[in-house]
Amino acid sequence: MGVFEQSPGSAVPGWPSRLHVVTGKGGTGKTSVAAALALALAGAGRRTLLAEVEGRQGVAQLFGIEPLPYQERRIATSAAGGEVRALAVDAEEALLEYLDMFYKLGAAGRALRRFGAIDFATTIAPGLRDVLLTGKVKEATTRMVDHRRVYDAVVLDAPPTGRIGRFLNVTAETARLAKVGPIKSQSEGVAALLRSPITAVHVVTLLEEMPVQETVDAVAELTGLGIPVGNVIVNAARPPLLRNGPVSQAQLRRGLAAAGLPVDRATVAALQTEAQEHLTRRALEESLQTDLVELDRPIVTLPLLPDGVTRAGLDLLATALLTHGQAAAGSDLTAT
Image (cartoon, rainbow, N blue to C red; front, side, top):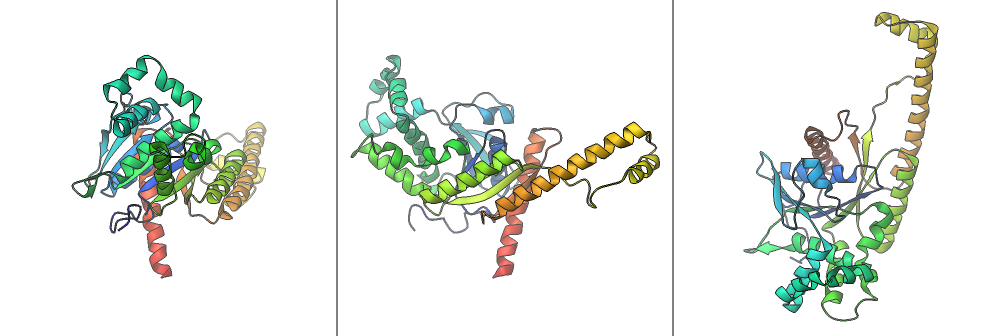
């Protein structure tokens, strides 16, 4: 079996990849979705790594723990025997690890930090920074101990859609940095992984115009780069409140009276205005949903969390993600 082929039995129904890259426009909840997906995979009995690369410590904040070091720490377990480990990938630490691995610099490499050489290197060559970050993710995804993979799945909380193509297209970013040597081979290895069957980039969106447009643009960009796109994940979806269209003031008065609520003219008029605004929003959301359907990618819908993104909320999203996977697997079986 090739290095970048999916191992038999290692995939979770509906989520067959081993490396799940989660992106989305800022504010769509991509970090929450990435965390929930890691919990979902662990809930299916998989040993999962949840990695972040933006230095925001978003995972630590979600789980209410201390900031993550450049070490893999267990942050959750499941009754099915799975677990989630988390890692905050730091470009400076990754460069030190890289220098030790390929050039055997050890303490000499660490001494460079005192002179600011590492910060200088990753600043003057931003493409190098992305190679280091994605290289660490590749290492974790392909790592083996005693001929067994350390992780069944890796979930990457990636940069937002506006930067995702440049971040993942490491070969082009490093072409100007090196023609031969470890940097070149490292970037080519990452590029091969990201274009292999074990990788899927999931795009998180809201049913709002700007996030949907960025989703459409990101899917087109990734497809053009040859990087596999997985699911489009619609986050924070609101349930429809009016299933039968507009309501009259007479209907509202009857409903309010039946509930023992005020039926004065001002209350009824205000409620009717809110109802109309809701219907207008629903019409826009349905139009945006059509735009997403035209991408021809599986769509996963996650509910709005009324109490915010708590640990209980993450578990609710994880359950929804697993349920989607089981339904998708059932549909595939039915189709065949």
